[in-house]
Picture (cartoon, rainbow, N blue to C red):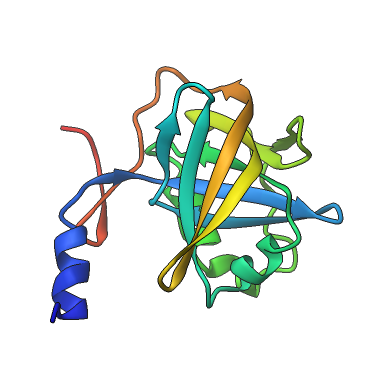
Length: 160
C-alpha cells in the first residue's frame, strides 16, 4: 500500500507551472489555483486539469459550461495565494483583478503569461478529483517577456 504522505511528497518532486482556472456561473465569477493543468491534444485542441471533489469550486463547477486557464507569471504569486483559499475571506476576490470576458463568458485575467478559454468537453471521475477536459475556443496573448510562476516541493520557485 502506498503511504499518502509519501505519495504527495513524490508528486511534489515534479515541478509545475501555476494557473488560476476561472469560470462564471450566472454571471458570478469564481477562481481556483491549479497546478494540475496539462495539454491533452493539438487536434482537436484539448486541455485538462482536475479539481478536488470536496472543494467549494467543485460544487460550483457542476453548473459551469466553460472555464479559462490563466497561466501565472512569477510576479503573480499573490493571485495564486488568493485563489488557493484566501479569496474565501473576501467579499469580492475579483474586485482588484483586471479581467476581460472570454468568448465563452469565463473571466480571463489580464497580464498573465497566457489565457486559454475553453468549453467543457467532458468531466471524468478521477478518484477524489474530477478531471475537466476543455476544448480550446480562444487564446489570449500574454506577457511574452515575463517568467513563469513555478511550484516545486511545496514552495514557489524561480527559473535559475
